[in-house]
Image (cartoon, rainbow, N blue to C red; front, top):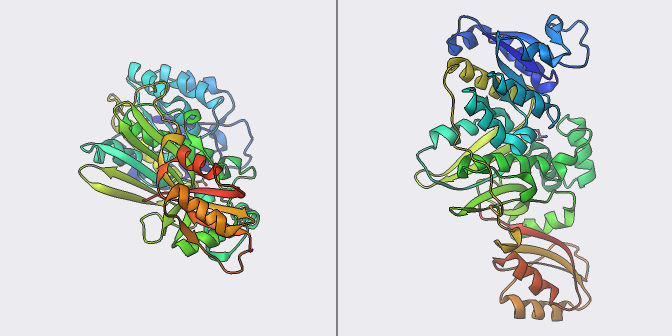
Length: 412
Ligand code: HSE
């Protein structure tokens, strides 16, 4: 069987490398007489590369070759990946992708085309890199009703937060180190602003709850406003700050989905996930909590997930996998302001004693936090749980309190 790879960057070249390195066992597992990369599509030249003879620049060569049964998309971005993938599926070819932006934006539509054409559209590598998560949710946990999913879904931001927490490094220095280590992109916006984690929670929520979740509907906040002062206060609270993507089934036709920094208590499953590692917690009614942990990015871990999907396609060339993933509906994701949470708040006030009294009057009890060498006008505390909009309106009602930072508290 012949395959083609579109995009010869980090992941695409990793796919070619894994197929070449483990060729014999991959062929055996694929139940095919042969499994060979016939074309690699990329606009760049790769003189002297081991795969130079396979390089093509014209997508139509792949599309119009009936011998190519499975196409790997590792180009990234929405365009032209979307047009290429939908054309391949319409031509009856199966497609495997690592592109979370594509799956999060167009998963429902591409799965519908695949269904019509009796082809497969597989995307194990789009969430968690080499961590098995798509197949476990759709197959191994299929007997469960999954009501909640939460995770540290972005390696770059987890590395930055770990450096801030463990090494007292500023956000800027930690980001620079992440870039020097090759974790963060040169333009790290999608990582640090939470968009990458948002795409991943959309994919996981669609799999768990059965309906497409559009990234625009998910409130997303990154880690750029987290300071070392917040890190210190949260340490005194007995926890750490993590960027958490989470989604919960609220009723048959409503879910919550949000990406934001969050306070996590030490000792919880997610608190000890450090550096570039990812962890995804799935709450099933039969299994209870199941946590998937490992490297969420990187050339060979991600390529390993892509190639596993290629093997799956090859083995099931006439059979199609159904993910039970329908199109989304309006107002499916509830406004995050309506959700229950506790809030960590850091503020300034000229009159601490009065501010504390006023806060107690509106919230009942608050948990006051401390740190060494705090400024005299600094006040940090954790509120009780309540609907976020109500907590905010209570905060606004407190005189002479200037809020500098607010972070949600989670209980995973
Ligand atoms: N930039 C992503 C991360 C890569 O840091 O997790 C994997 O999606």
